[in-house]
Length: 480
Figure 1 (cartoon, rainbow, N blue to C red):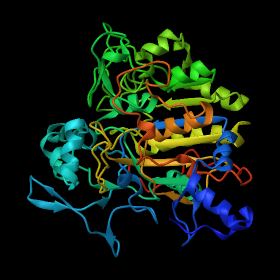
Figure 2 (cartoon, one colour):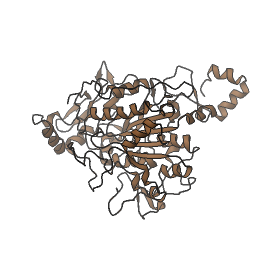
Figure 3 (cartoon, rainbow, N blue to C red):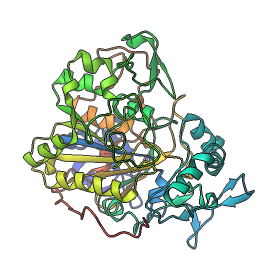
Figure 4 (cartoon, one colour):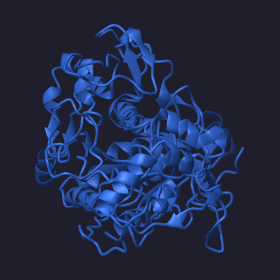
């Protein structure tokens, strides 16, 4: 039982009412609070109703960065363990027999490491969090060597892998500015211990699965590495995604694709940035909604739109209630795409929102879909056979976001769906028992006891904060 705050005593005015609040609502400590100060649980009516000031939820999904690789030295965050500025953690390099510590990597172009399901398991290594260099060295050595020689013929493989490298505020100043002025989430975990494709499935449906019988939601089984769309099987995802509930309630949604969709069978982001159709459109592994049966049944495929429509809607003040923004390879920060290019792309999107008539009623959730092989020191919690996966950065930007707040709650992308459901769907979950479209999912991820609530990142009692428009191409210390 936590001590009740004195201001709440004044409001309630009677010990009986105080006891009733404890019994019915409960209290929970959140983020950085002074001793003895607590916040009402989200079940408090006034706290809960504040969410409806948000009329537009925008999820910006970037690619392949761990929390430590971007915010490992961010003040106050659960970052890379250090003493006197020197990392106190290290992982073994099987090639040399030496231990490798995290280091400041100023390179704009990173290579990362392998990041499939088997790599997540090896990197985590039963909680030791020490497999990163091993997997990059043994499994990915040839690819890393080829990339290194392509980008710099004088660069030897001994300089790689770079999975222990991290960036700081001088390298990615805009990302750090958003984190300092709004909310940084330092325990945001990929919802699945796997790679980009199943992570994107989770982003819109809270599940990753294979469908045994075409179009039969009850034939789906959990899968760390599920089947993707093909020409012969264009809609293999029969379980329910969040757009089914949004459409059912008449809530507008759009899935924006950066410069359109990839139409051929090659789903892999190229290792070398090429200014052709492969690099400048969204690959199918990130463009998952067209593969969901219910999207076609509801005749909602027209809601998958090019990004230029988002920019028009932001300028006109006609943003949908819910939208996702998925990058192309060039803008994605997926190795080997430039970090600076991705930051500029995201800054342009956020500036457009901040200049929009819709800014005062918007919440932006910025994250990265998986860890990309980069080091992170925090052991992911286990909630079921699929996740959680390795920690990734998460930032909340909104006129109602708390200022300079670090959220230490345990989160995953399931929290985004939970927020959407609480804001627009009356708390309805992707629950086969109640959502009107049963599927065979083993659990309701939004209801996991360990999952935090994004409401705690907002202060709906404050006046809407003014926009913070940043330079699209800021000065950085990155080396190209």
